[in-house]
Image (cartoon, rainbow over all chains, first blue to last red; front, side, top):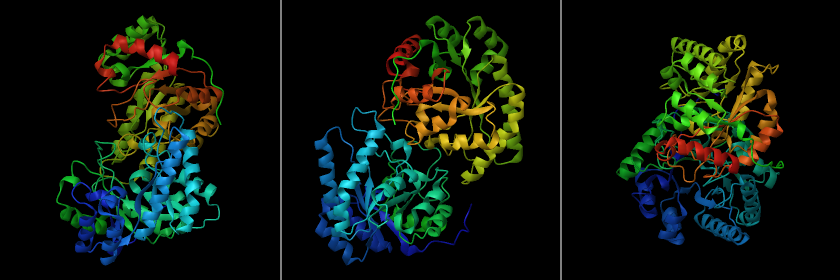
Length: 285
Length: 285
């Protein structure tokens, strides 16, 4: 079952998902921080991007020659009304344009959970399928791959009703059966580390559908459902093993660090966070 | 996909898992409470059983003619050392004897997570398989079915590394391929409601392997990973739909209410909790 584990990862693959420093830094500071620390990739969130301005951000990112390893995030498709669902799709089309303007490698889709008052998760999942189908032509025209992120089942109700790799890949098979490269998945270890099918599904996804790789760690105990992610090495996820599966399946992209941490990393000096990220990436990832 | 939903459930199927009132009542009070409220089933936890004494508890349960719809819990197999694993199995053998003394319908297995310091979830899963295999002969001799409870993936690290119905049923297939009835699963809606394979896996389990059915609700938001379960009707789980799947697969057993709720139901008058349970069972389950 286990692949041979390689040595330390290529430091040039490290990328900062700006959620990791969002309590301390805006996007401009995060871009400069990456440049200063020699981190070669960045993945911005749209609220920070809007605050900085897309053109200004694109210029700053280009000036420092950073790779944009993803834009977070599109998605949030399900809604109680047809008008709500249309509005979500319109917002997703704008997200594609923003990702294109930044030269992002993919647009990350956090697909959304149950509409308010609904208990019908099967219907929410159909709405997700319909939403992605509706935005796919624009994504193809912009040459912007859409990366479905299966979220941990603890977020099924309120954030994403796509909760396993198998489910995300079934959706890819349904909407892009020829594996055009326009649709794939984000493997975020926090969401999928527990899945007994993880290795098999990474293999199934293959190079064409493995669009991004997010790392952090699962802490024991975890004290908050949202904001208690750990830094690599502080938890129980066998990151080297999962990376070996990703590489075995042909993934050659970035290792993007995304840590929501209200009581620890968000309270620290962000330069220290980036230094730690670099060390932990080398040692534990 | 959806089955026709029946009307209100048979009130005689309602059972109290004593975790629901554990902050207020010991086992003796819970037994009397069930009798007083006309609840016909009870599922004790072993700590409360030990506090009351097995013989005394068995007599009180018999005196009130309650069905013991399960004993919580065996399991917790993985350990860092062989001695630790042997100790776990010995405790599980005692749990079988206790379940037998109570005339329980099954012994619930919460299988355990990663041994301290381990990141090897595949090995933990193998230890679970070996542990169940080791206790199965004694369970068969005592005619006490073992019910594997897949726990929500958010408990994979520290409580149970069996996290989906498919995984639990694969284990049943491996250890009891002839479906003797000695090994099956608990379907607890809290743990599995999100699973896109739930309907199919309930069908796959079938009557012989559906040993218990636990109900409660998933709250939005959920504020604690352990102690914030909801009462039926207060959350997003389509309980009537899941019951229709259970019944469609041949399940005729109890509907056991198990609610861990530090800030709500554990703070209320337990008689009120039981009254609410009965109403909500009829209305939402």
